[in-house]
Image 1 (cartoon, one colour):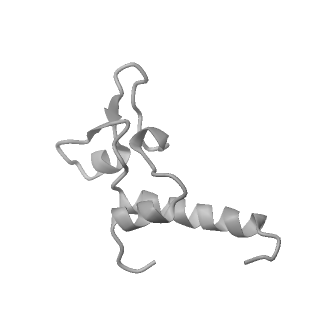
Image 2 (cartoon, rainbow, N blue to C red):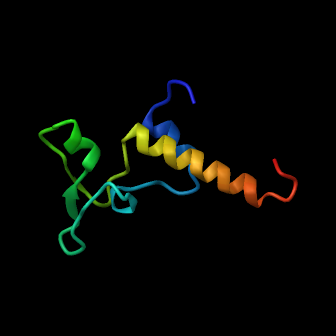
Length: 80
């Protein structure tokens, strides 16, 4: 995908990907905050994120874009 940032990847998705939608985020339903495993693995001091925060993890967003494109092409009758 080249050198793209998280905002560009967010635009390629059908809906904005938020922390609460990620399987690498372990937030609490009642307080809406939780740790991001990407940030925690990098030992960032601020690895607890708000669930409704737009994801800024390029690795995760690239994975989501690729998966969405694959699903879209599978469901396309012309195969494009």
